Structure formats: structure tokens, C-alpha cells
Length: 131
Figure 1 (cartoon, helix red, strand yellow):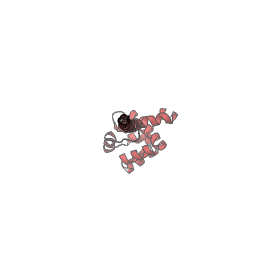
Figure 2 (cartoon, helix red, strand yellow):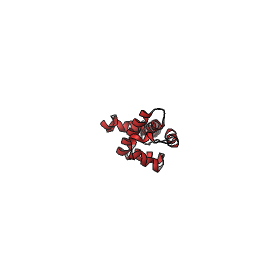
Figure 3 (cartoon, rainbow, N blue to C red):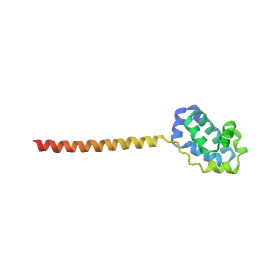
Figure 4 (cartoon, rainbow, N blue to C red):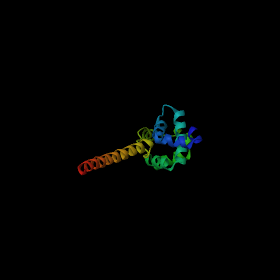
């Protein structure tokens, strides 16, 4: 798998909500091979990244999570319609992705620039009044 070859790539994929999409693919009972591949990829991410494991565990029932971790490769064979629906309707979102960091950085820079601009304008006004 691609994620196993590059942990940096795996982290970037996590930031792009790949875990959510893998869970959705696992629940799509029209494509058994996709279910199997998505299950294996998500299992790797769960075993490698604790944050993914935590969110997956919260998104499904404890028994379903245990079944998934015990045999991800053949999970799709014994999946119930309710389990598939849980996967299809998951709203899992792992915070801290690059986009939220970029947003916070930009917000910080706007606040900093606005504060500096006000300071600079006040300084110029005071300088001209004193001359």
C-alpha cells in the first residue's frame, strides 16, 4: 500500500480526510473489493496513527471496532446492513489538518498586521503633532 511506503504521505492523506472516505468505501456494499482495500488501508492508519484509531473507535460500536481490528481483510463478508449504514453515514473529521493550521496562521497574521497598522498610524499622528 502507498501509505505504508511513506508515513509523510499517510499524514497528508489524513489531513485530507482520507479516513472518512475509507470508512465510506468500507460501507459501500456494491463493491466488495473496494470494501476490502479500504478496510485494509484504514486498519493500517489505525495501527500507525493513534488519532485515527481514536476517531474510528468513536465512530463505530465497540464490537464492530473489535471485529474490524481482528480481521479487516474479510470484514466486508460478515458486515450487517446496519454496520454498512454506520460507515456510509460517518461524519468523522480529524482536526489539525493543514487547512485548519493555514487558516489559523493567516488569521494570526491579519490580527498582527491590523494591530501594527493601528500602532503605526497613531505613531505618525503623534510624530506630526510634535513637529
